[in-house]
Structure formats: structure tokens, C-alpha cells
Image (cartoon, rainbow, N blue to C red):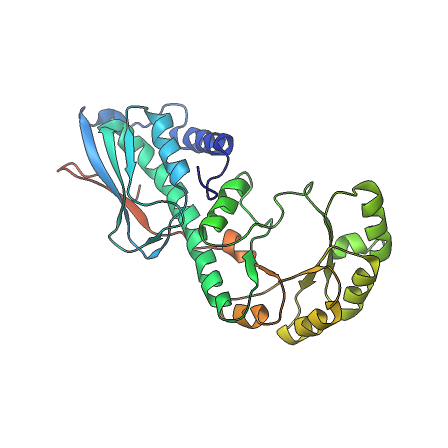
Length: 289
């Protein structure tokens, strides 16, 4: 197991739900009609990118039929090129074909996230030391899988869920002051990091005075962020930017001196990486079903 792998229990549960959704009450009607016998197939990248989702794909084949074997030639986090064989799959024809689409769905989706993250990481590298982070803008039920894909792409994870940190955002602060919020957090959850979202310099100064551990500078321009970095000098406080950051602007934000850049689109809008499965005999399966 590597740092890119999600928890085994999460993989098993996600795959179980995905297969139940695909198989329905009667199973794979078409694959029940194909000739018996074992086949060999290759999982192949059709686009350049970064791979993620190996554990999920392997688990799909395992749950469909333990007799199917998967031999991987690439690992999560690896760069892949069009035509590269990612894995060799051997097993009963019907089982391989039943598992095909669900395995590819996981691989393509998670590799797409890893690929998008790697683009942001590369673009930010020319600007400064800031690390790329994800957000909670994830597919319901797939968060731990998608956050593992973020790590495979070279990014960092923001909080996994609401119980991990205390984080005051604009809607929370509509009913309290920043100082009151930080004080209440210290009293109720003394061992938790306290984040405050700020969209103007006055809030930054209030959060610094209140002793927040980290500030999320939301929807600010790079110039505004630089002012905030200057104001925060001398404070033991992490600075993170978010909101509308693109591949074209991420280097400018990275150069501002912040610690992290969080980008929701790397999980909620990443295009799938094109990956296919090809049967290595005369009876080739359709790749688009």
C-alpha cells in the first residue's frame, strides 16, 4: 500500500455499490451468452496523463470473479502516454467483460483527477512554494477515492470532512464575529485547527488578532493576496487562497507567498482520462457500452 491508496474498506464499499448499480437484478445478460473459456485483455491509456485508481479497478475484477487476475505495468502516480499498457487481465471471458466498464469508470475518473492535479502542480511550480490542495467539492460517496487521486497527481488534501477542523466561512460569520468564533472554537475544540475564511483585508486583520491558525483568502486577486501575506508576516498562521483559480492564474497566486492553493475544479470538474480495455483475440468486446 502506498500513500496514494485509499482505505481498503472504502474501495471495497465503492466497488460493491458500483457493481450493484451496473448489474441490477439479473446480472450481465449479454456476457451470459458469450462462449466459455479464458481470455487475455490489455488495459491501455489512450491519452497522456497521470494514473490513479488501480486499487479500485483490481477490486472490481476481484468482486466479479476471483479467478480473474490483473497484472499491473503502471502504478498510481505514474505518468502515462497514449498506447501504454497499464495492465494485463486474464480470466473467464464473461467475467472480464462484466467487470470491464466499472473498472474503466473508476480508472478513467480517478486518473482524470490525478491528471488535472498534475497540471496545476506543474503550473504553480514556476511561481513559488505553494502546494495545490483539493476541497470538499467531491462526488458524494467517493471522497476518499478522489482525495487519493489528488495525492497521486502530486497535490495535497484539505480537510476530509467537517469533523476534522473548525472552519468559519462567510455563512458562519453572518451570525458571529471572527473573534467570538475563534474563542468559542478554542474553548470547545482546543486540539483542532481553526481556519477563518476572509474575503477582505479587514477580516484578515481581525482573524490574525483573534489568533486563528490558518486563513483562507477567498476570491481575492493576486495583488490583494500579496497585501494579506505582508500583513500576516510575523504571525504563526498558514495562508491559503481559493476561488476561481485557473491554470493561467495559479502561478501568480503561488508567487504571492501563500502556503496553499485550493482548487475545487480538480475534483468536481476534472475530465476523465481516456482508458480502454482490448481483448486480445478475435472476439473483441465493444469499448463504449
